[in-house]
View 1: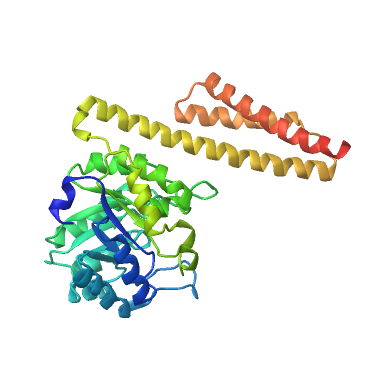
View 2: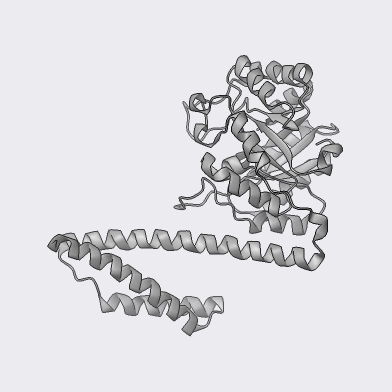
Amino acid sequence: MQKSYLQSRPVVIAGPCSAETREQVISTARALKGRVNYFRAGIWKPRTRPNAFEGVGTKGLPWLVEVQKNIGIPVMTEVANAHHAELALQYGLDAVWIGARTTVSPFAVQTIADALRGSGITVLVKNPMHADLKLWMGAIERLENTTKGDVHALHRGFSSYGLKKFRNAPMWEIPIGLKAEMPDIQLFCDPSHICGRRELLQSVSQKAMDLGMAGLMIESHEDPSLALSDAEQQLTPFDLVKLLDNLNIRDLTLDDKHITDLRDLRIKMDSIDEHLVELLSSRMSVAQAIGEYKKENGLTVLQLSRWREIMKTRKAWSEEMGLQEEFLRGILEQVHKESIRIQSEILNSEKK
């Protein structure tokens, strides 16, 4: 990342999830020129399942070079192995990023770091798919130990089973923890992969700015409805500009250390509360399923043996976690009361 770009926030990295055709790449880049610092496009796409669109591969590299040379926007793409990294260097790309699926493997990261050894290319390292701070830090350190270019962190959220609001849970406390452990690292945010839906992008982008992150990587496609990958989370260039124009960028120099520390702690609390609400919602979904089962099998709603079991096991948990028994009992009573209400509504619905 060119140092001059880091003097003002946000550094904007934008472009399509996937480079699909030369015409799509060039058209999107032209529409973004003047509003972005870097143009991004994936040409190698690690997909969860086979037979999905896995990118155009090496033939997309000349398209990125054309954006770089003829349109005048620095470019970057994802590299998932040493061969990709070598090709990025061979074609003279300005930067690369390492994806979440690659960051989970120290062996894979090291092979990329070795391929980039001694180069001045900029590297952004996405967090691993699961919330492992040390694994993320280790990947960054591997790149810092071999390359001469800048290495930055890129927060894209974490896989979280059963949570529905985001594609990947933000867990803002993890990037805050990274910044605390590595204060000199520049931290970027990828709202597209956190959100999974374009209607959430504005609020998540604003949150990233409020946390003092250096920049944003946002996917932009000239016609998202035709995108071959991640269509739901991509913005048109016009809508991307609107998002950027609506960001409130605060002057971080106005915050003293105590204000910054307190803000970070409150963000951690907000993130945990968000998880609590989502988990409570999931629990009530299970309560609804139990209500349906009881209705089908003629069972009563309240079963005292189950309530005694809940209180016994949860009491043990509270002792292990250092929580006051009365505090946990009060919470569990309210949760159980709501579960009973949901199940009662289901059982009574047959009488209407």
